[in-house]
Length: 117
Image (cartoon, rainbow, N blue to C red; front, side, top):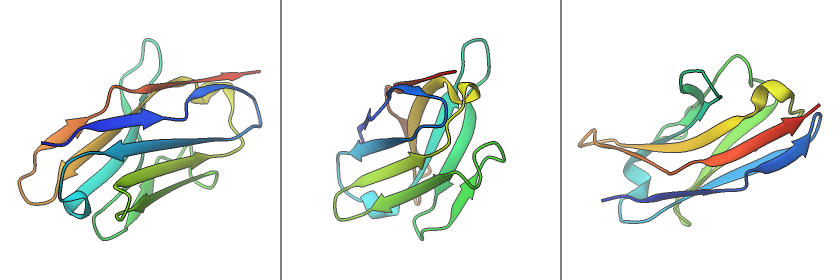
């Protein structure tokens, strides 16, 4: 069983930065593929960025070039650094883990990000 707890959300002005963190409990963090998703009011949940067990990263077009996802297997943590934020980044951000062997997935409770113009 894996539990995910996000932190780092909040209110920020347009042009600012935030660093979101996701702490994972349980064993086998190194076997987890990790990702950040977001859901804005009235919209579907979408992938923001992901990082595989091996460290391969992918980004949504909307955040590419101004966001960096990273993982620390020693601390069971994945982070998302987001820069040059704009009001369109306002959403609830969720951490997702998918076990690289069982395929089971886990979600955190989310952290809210609000970008004011």
